[in-house]
Amino acid sequence: MTVNILQFDNYIYSIKKSIGSTLFQTVWAEVDGEKKDILNNGQYSCAIFLSSILLWFGLIKDRHATTAGLLKDMEKSGWYKIDELKPGCILYWEFMFKNGENNDHIGFYIGGEKAISNERDVSTPIEHHYTYGVKGGKPVRKIEAIYWHPRLDNKYFH
Figure 1: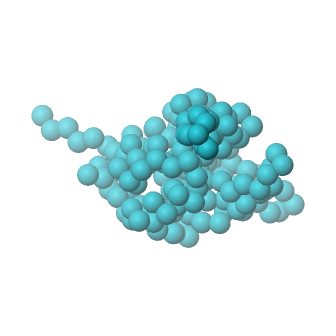
Figure 2 (figure 1 turned 30 degrees about the horizontal axis):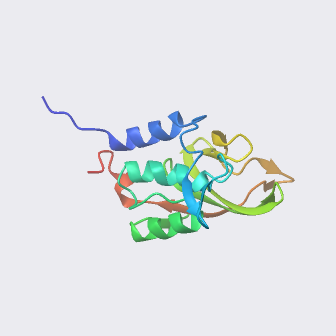
């Protein structure tokens, strides 16, 4: 009997099954000598959500609490920018002022004009339109970059 794990299918399935998960809400750190949840109970969890899944599938080297750290690791790990959306790619959205702060954001594109990313207002990953919809003929949130890893081209990606 021959068994070949369909890594790409498992990658997409894991992303989709993460919706509503509280697993990515908290990262404890020592800040100025005090123990603190640096993700504020999921409000700042987009990078830890993505990096946890990418690390699990061997597509980056470490988990990250910031988008800047995650993007650096992605680029060092072979991710590169592409022009066209593909299921499994990473979306990096523009900075947006929300809840009194200017935030950048990152998530997974799953196809069918849908993305999954951590939603700060509910503190868990949600499925949403890949640009958060369109208003006045323009995306609600502009995509700054689309990233792809060459291993995702192989359904087994050994």
